[in-house]
Image (cartoon, rainbow, N blue to C red):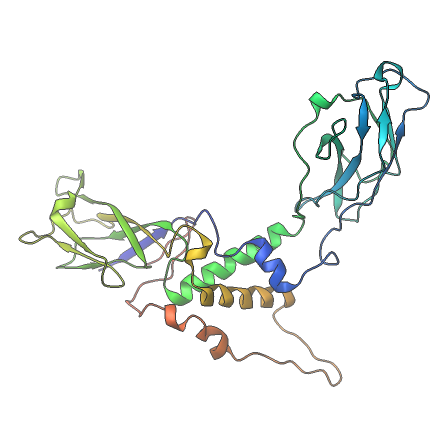
Length: 328
């Protein structure tokens, strides 16, 4: 009997970008570094303006196609004594970023404060001056505290490693919704792929008249003791007949170790980190050694052995693909 499983990607991953950065020991040489401090002063010649009376500081962030740096070094303090006389600030020596920087953002404190709020975006990587005439009340969101300029790449590696681990273990790691499609009900039990089963949401089927019906929960039993979980008719019941068509039965269920990364066994996360480390350091299919250099490889059976205790025996399931793909 044909089986088809469609899975929805989890909303969180077993590893965070911070976990991967720590494991790879990445530093500022691997991503866009934070900006240095700009120069700040009262506008000259003096002019009335909107900047509130009090002490102010400025920080800068760099924006790339991948993300944004954390707020950089703080400028010296500039004090507005009477904004009706001189209420504008002049910023010079605004730092320029590397070749990947597409824009920069300015972040200023409110009068006497120590939290930096969005003042303006400079939509280039060339201008080094800016005149500030913005009141505290018009400042925006708080400045970022982490550097995300590598996040998209590392995030993709995390997703890839998680999918590899799910394929190798035949499990769902983080809670996700799965739909098992069958052409008809089996003779007795249905085995649910990709444990650990958390709950069965519904069982629907197309009856002989072509009408989609929902099977009442009293008519079937869910065995969560066995792994993978099984579904059988309740005592004295049999599966209903279905129309002769493909995917006439759909069983929707939730599976995974849990909804958070802490639910995933450490051995699985360590295996993922091994894979991510390889993806980070090896960006090509072949590595050519020169001179006396030699390629040393950790044995695959050691790395893959990290997943051995969590791998489900083969029930002839296909390989799962998230939302955009199917398995047969």
